[in-house]
Each structure stands twice: as C-alpha cells, then as structure tokens.
Length: 412
Image 1 (tube, rainbow, N blue to C red):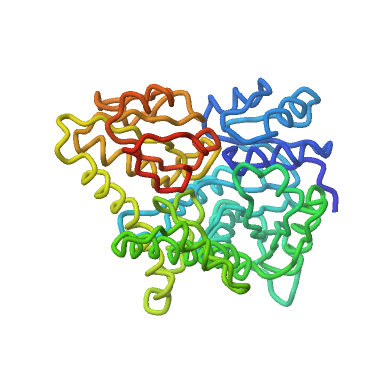
Image 2 (image 1 turned 90 degrees about the horizontal axis):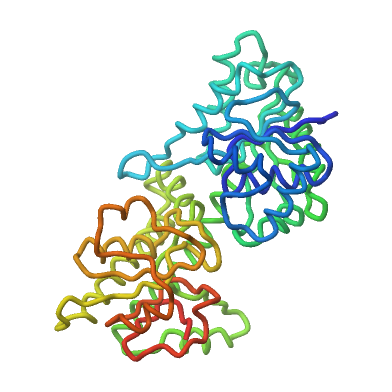
C-alpha cells in the first residue's frame, strides 16, 4: 500500500502535531482547517498553539515542502480526521456536526483506493456514521458497510483514537501504542500501514472500529473515576480538618495504593468529555462513571464557594487567580475548571487578576467584563486580598505565598 500524500483534517492540538510528525518522516502532508488564520500561520512555518517541540517540526516541514495547509480538502491517499466532538445542549449528548461537516467537505475529492480514518474521540458508532455520510455524498464509490462476503470496497474506513498527553504530544505520537479498528479487515490493514509510517516505537494493535472507539472512552473514564476518588477525598478532608496532601502521601506508602492528586476539577477535551459519551449511551448501567463525572464537575463550584467564604468581610475584594489552562504548562483552555472558576468569580462582581503565563490575552468571553484583567505574577501576589492557585504551572511551584492563599493544587 502506497501512501505518498496524507491529509490531516483539523489542525488543532492533535491534528497539527500529527501532521508535523508525519511530515518529519519525509511524507507529503496536506493539512486542512477552516480557520484562515491557522492556515496562514502554519504556511509561514509558525504555530498557533503551545506544544513543546512543535514549532521546530512545523518550520522545517514547511520549509522543506512536506507540509502545506489549506482551508478546503485536497486530494490525498489517506485522510486523518481530527475535528472536535462537543456536546449538544445540556444533557451531554454528543454533537457530531463537525465530523459530518468534514465528511461532506471531504467527499468530493475522494478517489478509489483512498483511506479515511476518524481520530476524533467519538461515541461508539461514530465511525459508521461517518462512512454513511461519505457514502451518501459519493454514491459512485463503494464503502465497507455496503460490502458482502468480505469483498473489498473502493474506500477504506477506520477509527484510530488519539491518546497523547498535552505537553508531550510529539514524543507520544511516536512512542505510544495505537488502537486501530476498521469497518472491515481491509480497512484495518490499510490504516495500520499508515500509522506504521510514523509510530516508530509504539505498537499498532488491530481491532474493529467499535472496540477502538470504546477503548478511548474507557481509558479516560478510568482516569476520571480515579481523579474523582481523589477529589472526593479532598472534600471529605476539608470537613474533617485533615490535610489531604499529607493523607494521600501516607496512604500511597501502601504497596498497592496509588491515589492521584486532587485539584480544582477536571478539564480538557478528553477526560472531562469522553466519559459522558459512555453515560449518554448507557444511562442505566454506567452508574459509577456517571457519579465520577458529577463529583469532578462539582469541584469547581466547591472552589468558588470556598473563595467566597475567604473574602467575606473584605470591601471590594481583589482576587488573584493563578492559572486558566486545564493542566500545567500548556495554553489549552478547553473544558478548563480554572477558567470556569475564574469566570464565576468575575460574574459575581469580584475584581480578578488572572495570571496565565501561557497566553497573551484573555478569552474573548471576558471582553465585556471590566473587573478582570491579565496580570503579572508579582503584581497579582502584591495587590490581591486572596490568592487562588488553580493550575500547577511550573512558574507557581515552590513560591513563598502569602497567608491569604487558597492552594487547590498543592503548589506550595
């Protein structure tokens, strides 16, 4: 199987690193994103996100002609789709509109022998829906779900969920195992051949599409449940007058105990989202997963309550919020509990000084609020009545914090 040109659709936190790593293997990559600024930035050899090592890869790949970005799909041998999968409404129903839109945009350029891989984290069955959307748009081509008796279709369809850690994406794209599930054996074989082009240290493990979809949801639900245990412990310890950090440190001295660290909630577009896909499709049986989500979603509200208690009696209190990203040392604000907490405090009328070393301006949602501003760390610590540590950025660790500090991530 020859894959001389690979297209990556969606050039965000997953798509752009994937495109850059593939291009670094001297494979021509056509990137696609609907955002003109993103496309222009990449074609200049620069990046629009924060990810260690990424800008160097993009700069070289663009300069050597192996990576070029467009706002519309271009012809390629294989297409890797990495677009968002948000919620629809307030009941955590998965919204596949971006996958549907990308599929319909891609369909006109498909040719016999092409492979389409869905990388977006999705509810079980999403890959089949993508294949249906493509088939409806291209009735002149055959797809796996239309074939009988193991015959090979003209277009191959597979799912391969991303499973990388922000801040270490470049390394993990090469080293992590990949779960690859096609809609049929031919699709699995084709997708495996593509990923073996750049997954140099990890193993490419074959399964079916539905199992591949569920594997990613399971991995993040497992992590969410374990984080929920730590967060619930922190709530209990607050009521019992116990230092939760010391408690966990002591409990973890047991050879078979490894409790995670609590925080101000759970963020990102994986752990904070994926478990809801399982709950949405299995509301009567996913009881533990559902409860873990409720615990972790409650933690930001609890933090807001604690801050409001801390500023009682202070006239027009000024609050320093340290960190907006969903995890340390990145700029990703998606589903960030720190962002949620800061927003709630600002809407409550408090004066907020935000310290986020990985961004240069506040999100547009704050443009109408005059009581919140981006600040230096020194200014925030000096001028605030209460300091709230929300993200364990490296710049915040080990500082001499004032007595009026509420530390929810143990940065002291």
